Amino acid sequence: KHKDSDIQIKDCMPIFQHIRMVKASDEIEHIKESIEHTRLGIEFMMANCKKDMFEYQLASFFDFSIIYNGNKKVAFPSVVAGGKNATVLHYSKKDAILNKKDLVLVDVGCQTNYYCSDITRTFPVSGRFTKRQRDIYEEVLLVNNMCIASAIKGTTLTELNNYATELLIRACYRLKLIAKDEEIRKYYWHNVSHFLGLDTHDVGFKDMPLQPGHVITIEPGLYIEEENIGIRIEDNILITEAAPINLSANIIKEPIDIIKYMRSNKDRLI
Ligand code: GLY
Ligand code: MN
Image 1 (cartoon, rainbow, N blue to C red):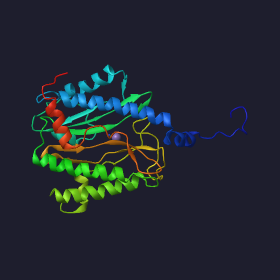
Image 2 (image 1 turned 120 degrees about the vertical axis):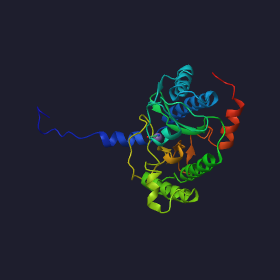
Image 3 (image 1 turned 30 degrees about the horizontal axis):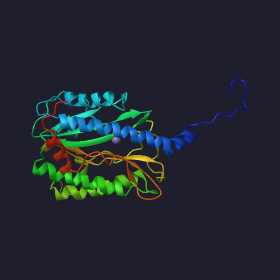
Image 4 (image 1 turned 90 degrees about the horizontal axis):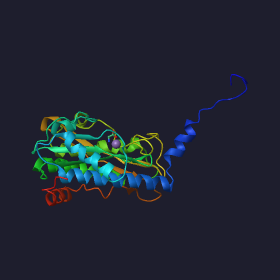
């Protein structure tokens, strides 16, 4: 352009954004592999979680699993947050002790052939939920499942987030946390979804209708500081012509499966 002022320089970003948003089949395979490594890492954490462990110690089981199983990189610094710490969205300190009465939230992912996974699971440090923890967990799980089912072609991330907020408002009334709708902002304030791919928060537009080949997260949560409870459940979803596919469906999330898995591994340390 310095040499020839007739040259028009255009921004190539819109082209690449579109190409990146619609995943080809080999890209989806890389994401699936990345999710599988993350599944192994999460199960390794669940199997080896012990009361009085530091959060960073629990996180080290994830890192170990990722490297041991032949994957080289985590996608982002793992979040491992016990009790009240789980009410902080990107909690990074990991220097607190895991209390046996608390839940622990793990938000983790890895990068396989440059493609990311981004999964959140929340489980009891002791392997057993209190009634209140389980009631709240079931409410978040319901929203997770309903939003996954609604991640259909043509909908937008903004619509999904509005839907999640509506559902979480109803959940908070049932849990006796709020007296009016606006109070939801105290317990849920982030977005329910983002695009996933070469970046954990991949390129994409919140108001663009979803298309087959898009891969997004669904991650509702409730964060109740006064009860030391933060719960988020995050899955990675492929949009198709028909029903959405939960690519992380194999990662334990039903309370009964978490309880059984942790009980059957209760003596594990490694
Ligand atoms: N999973 C948390 C986030 O996407 O920021
Ligand atoms: Mn996420």
